[in-house]
Length: 307
Ligand SMILES: CC[C@H](C(=O)O)C(=O)SCCNC(=O)CCNC(=O)[C@H](O)C(C)(C)COP(=O)(O)OP(=O)(O)OC[C@H]1O[C@@H](n2cnc3c(N)ncnc32)[C@H](O)[C@@H]1OP(=O)(O)O
Image (cartoon, rainbow, N blue to C red):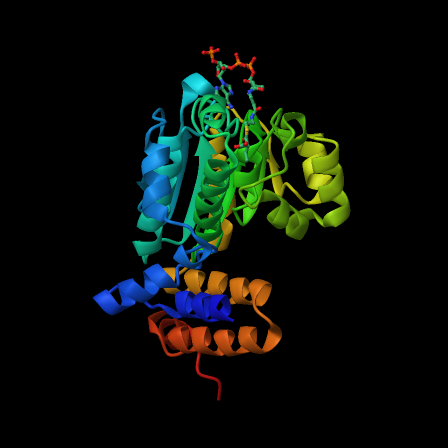
C-alpha cells in the first residue's frame, strides 16, 4: 500500500519546490528498495564508483525532448560502476526538469549498450554486492520508466544483457535497421536483475518473454515489430541521422504544452500500475491539474462560439 501511495504522491507532485516536496519526492520517488529492505544507496554508490569508465550524458533541447547518451565506446557502451551512478544522477536531473516532455535514450558511436562492464561484474560477483547493484539499478530504471515524460530507446547496433533491460525501462523502442536486442543473461548463467524480466513480460507477454530469455534469442527489427518489442524501425536515410529520425517520431506524441504531455504520461502510468479505484482517483487528480489550465483556456478561446 505504501508503494501505491508513494506512486500517487509522485504523480501528483506539481513541482519540486519546497524542502517538504523534495523530502516527499525523495521518499516517494517510486523507488522499489529503501533502507527498510537493507538497501543503503550511499553505500552501494560508493562501491560502484570504484569501477570507473565512460559516462552517461544528458542534453536538454529547446524542443523539450532531452537526449540521454550511454557513452563508453571503447567498451561497446558497457555500463561501468560509475556509469550506473551517473545514470541515477541523470534520472534525478530529469525528475527536476518540470518542462521536459520527451526523452530519447541512445548509445554513442552507433551502438546501444553491451550490458554491465564484465570487468566490474567479475569484481562484484559475490551475492551480496551483486544484489546491491541489482537493487540500485532496479530503483534507477523504475524511476526512469515513471518519469512524467514520453521516453523512447533508440537501438542502433546491439543492446545486450543489461542494455536489453535498459530499453524495457523506456515507453517505446525504435530499432535502426541491422540492430539487435538480445537478453544474453542465460549464456552467463543469469537471469535479468535490473527489472528487465518483469518489464519484458508487460511489453511482449509471458510467452514471448519466455522465448527471448530461455532462448537468448537475437531480436532483429522484423521480429521486434512482430512481437511488440519494437514500436518502429528506422531505415537508413541520407538526410536524417537515426537520432533526428527518432526525434521526429517522438515529437508526434510530445507536440503540445508540457503540462498536458506530462499529465498524459501520469494518467497512463497510473492506469498501468495502480488498481482501478486508485487509478481513477489519480486520473481525477491529474485532470484537476490541467482543467482550466493555460492550454485548456487557450484551446477554448480558439474554438468558435456555438450559437
Ligand atoms: C544484469 C545485466 C548483466 C549483469 O550485470 O550481470 C549483464 O549485462 S552482463 C554483460 C552482458 N553483455 C555481454 O555479455 C556482451 C559482451 N560483449 C560481447 O559479446 C561483444 O563485445 C559484442 C558482441 C558486444 C561486440 O563484439 P565485437 O567483436 O564487435 O567487439 P569486441 O568484442 O572486440 O568489443 C570491443 C571492445 O569492447 C569490450 N566490451 C564489449 N562488451 C563489453 C562488456 N560488456 N564489458 C566489458 N567490455 C566489453 C571488449 O572487451 C573489447 O575491448 P578490448 O579492450 O578491445 O578487448
